[in-house]
Image (cartoon, rainbow, N blue to C red):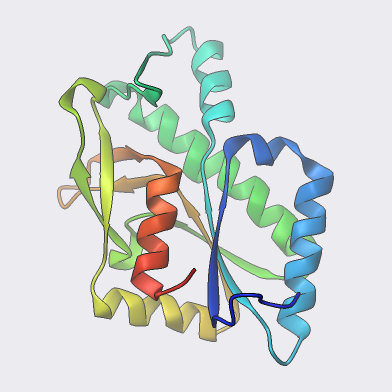
Length: 184
């Protein structure tokens, strides 16, 4: 896979809907694995959402699904379910596809290793936060994972300094990761 951006690292955001496209995911990971074998390899950080999976789980549990201006309302009591869908089911599905392609995926959440810091968003949304990129030490930690050959798979959930779970928009998590790494 040739990197048209001539950058060392690309941040790729996958929507929750992408997780239902098995053939497309297999093709993506095959291309990434081909890039990893190339001398001019493109190192990739994947950031994903999982709204489809979260909705299915919430419906299965009889929990309401509410949105304000298109954003999921995430009450504190629903965060274990939301985090389980995002950092569990969705992340594992992507990591499985990456592993089948010969990559070394490593699952992270958006705040692991200081990659980002949660800032509460609109209080009407409950535990929904925006994310700010981490500092230069976090950048070095993430680059060390890439240098070691890992493909970070970052879920759009995080924790605050007290360890409380937060739902983070995957687009925002991808932008914060890209900003941290100086990636397109």
